[in-house]
Image 1: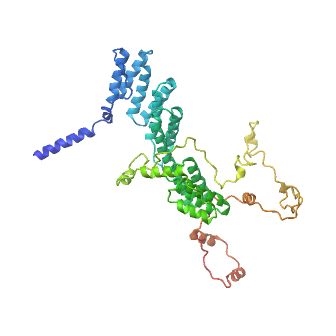
Image 2: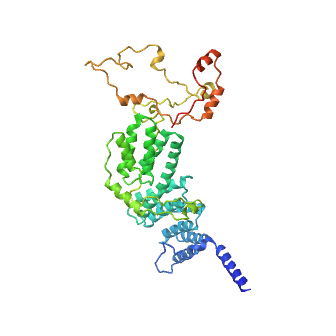
Length: 452
């Protein structure tokens, strides 16, 4: 009987704890920006009542009280504190809707009171709003990108604030998550054989986020992608290997990268002492994952930032996308002398869409070869230059020859044997004499895909 009564009491206690509202967790949390002035002014009384409501989780009542203060005492000395308290009440309430309201209130506070010390705190709260809503690396990155912009803005506008060191570490954590997403995308391209896209993604990743925990592995994959694209990209592959040896000397890929440079007859650079000290500090201070972290990690909403850098200056510039090598240089407007066939024209005739179905009213001009007049041999611009004046043979410029080659393909052709067999069955059969001639002295074996 006693045991049953104790069990009932325990169940009632659990129900009371689980049934307690979420706002009750703020009851013991004091308000960060109280007014210490001891006075019985009516506006001060209203402010103290609103602060008490915020501390006890009565956010809606607190906002009504603060709005009464603002509308009644428009010249009060506590006006700025009241506007900040309204934003804090939305921030403490939590949730996507409340945080959106809090961000708008914090932005208004910065706009009206930019010189107050609480302006830096308002920007820090805006950064935290997006930081808390940040998704994992393989999910939507919108909140992570917003958090990066807001934390970078805090460090630029308030570099001497007490919130600047915390914002700097949050920026490192955010950029770790963004870099992890780019790394997954680059490795997806590398695995499927799209080496130009993989090299473009991973190279831009390392250039933008050099503090990324897998930057050395990204550079290794960059070098491997350039190597698989042919010998004309050997310089880019060597540059990636050299950067591993120099900027990531304690990496697991440093020794292998040095060996590759020796095989390519390239100089092996010395390790940067600053980079060596930074990597040593990161290895010694990196937080290790617990036993249950991998199991519980799949149920967490927020990303894992344990591998983020603890030192170094985070990237303060926005990401600028680059073009992969599979895109012809002539289509890039920034290329020297690059001309694109994409143009724009103002149409003055309103009936042009009805009378002229072809949208390209001015097709590109014909090339020089279409006129039928071949250029004279040895003339300027000829494809077959004459002998040099001193009688020596014309030397071939390797860089010019490489520029004339077609760009590397972004997708490898299928190598499946099943697809090749389907192609063979769909092709028309050869005539009898040709088939007998082709089969003489040969064996009828299916074509094998090229070995990797």
